[in-house]
Image 1 (cartoon, one colour):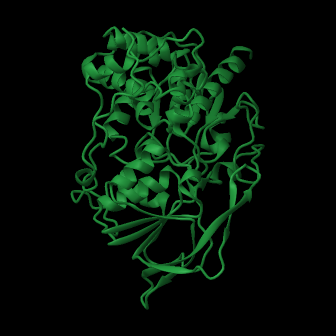
Image 2: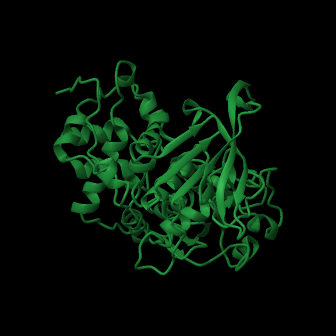
Length: 461
């Protein structure tokens, strides 16, 4: 029976003032009863716009219908037909801008909670079902994938299902890319990522870690090793800074380093010999999901005050609404329409404050966003002992400078056509290495396109 409630079934969560002191997952997930009730809100539209909003083309009404009937295993299997990482996507995808943003239920209320239902189906399957590994007939062709992040893992999984022998070369000591080094434990438990990667291993995907391509091996050398094609999904791990005075002070981090040390190196856990400075007052510069993650991690490390400094207003913040709400609930303080101008340090070079200036929004820029401009005489200072710059990232140039015939644009991103083909024969690329820092699901969509294109290319040679 259709549930015509205009509101989603709320997701159970840890209380804000409890969770901001631990790294356990914030959202606790639906019970089976909640999932069925929420699934019954789906109208099963004849023209499901939600599917068109999904970069990996999950058949959303079909899997939700299976949940409404209580067939949770089949719901997962339906998702997994097109999505290699359902438990991940159910947690970190910006559904409000994609599938849920196109849901007709959102016209007169809240959309169906597609992401929460995807997470439920995936968690149920991983906890209760044993994967039956089907025999895959190998076609005798080899493909190398550079980077074990969302784009690379998706491409590898799709190619393995098609019969290719796939080897993934990962720079870090653990596969997962941004899923393990960038997204905090309280948003995406690492055991979930590990379980998803096991599913890829079961398909025959080989993952080689500690392989920095461009240093240990070049793309040209990989091709010489007998690989028929290469997909580069190396991400965008080179951090950007503001270029202001004082950024070299002790206690200034890029969000990339800060989150990597916490998430991948477990700096928050005293059992690990990988400590990080636990500041009492922290400024995080930026307004995206990475800024929210860094601020919320700093709070969990014991900071009494954590400030988000962003030069536009809340409506212009690129972060997910849910992440902004969670940050506010956890007592993160927002200094909006503010821009840093200088970082002050003491006589020993340690951060002691950040100078800012108030901003106002002017006319829209080329992208349609209103351009911020400073207000004369509005300078102010915030006392902090650490500053985290969350201003975006760009691709590491190592692969570009060690590979012949591989063109990049002025931002250092690989130039590709609509099939993810680079300017070098048999080399494809996708994800953040092409777009710059973006979302997990967009990287996965690029990985799927890359796998399809590689398959078509190799079948015709």
